[in-house]
Image (cartoon, rainbow, N blue to C red; front, side, top):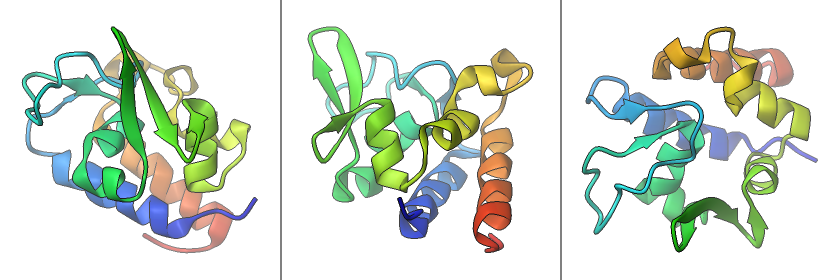
Length: 131
């Protein structure tokens, strides 16, 4: 599978736009269910959740879908971790390293900029491209 650098660029742009705007970042959920009618209204989300809720993510086909109270990521017929892997062109292990709460030492205290830094290091080391 080929890493999709363009989709990582979309993600980094979305995350950096939220870095200082007070969005509730929560590493252990795609997003909570308080996102309604296009209004953030207290939504907490992880990096992939923020992307899926953004206009940029939706335009790229990466989105949150809901089935009752359940929310899941969707991309080209794949869901959740499979959607993440396909969207970014990365392996299961890489997806978990970058986005899984338990891959961070103190995930309850992990900030959005910690995830941004990890993604940028991953791109630099894996692809030799500085961000």
